Image (tube, rainbow, N blue to C red; front, side, top):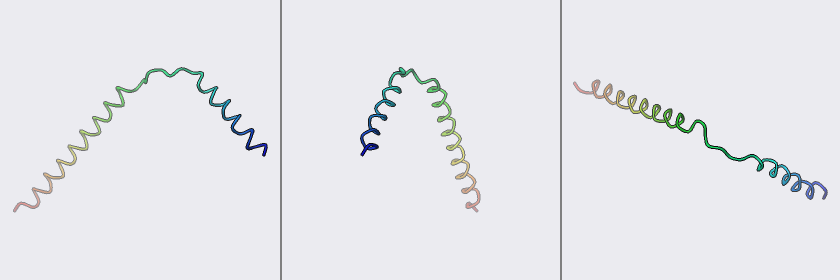
Length: 60
């Protein structure tokens, strides 16, 4: 019975300690967006290259 009662109390203390730090702005928000766009562009180029290669082999 003791672990059932003490567990939530200790968890509440841990959550209270975490809440003392303020939340700041994201540092890498712009860089992450740029990387995502770069990956999307590369994927698009690969897909187009695959279609071109396939069409060249199929056409007599």
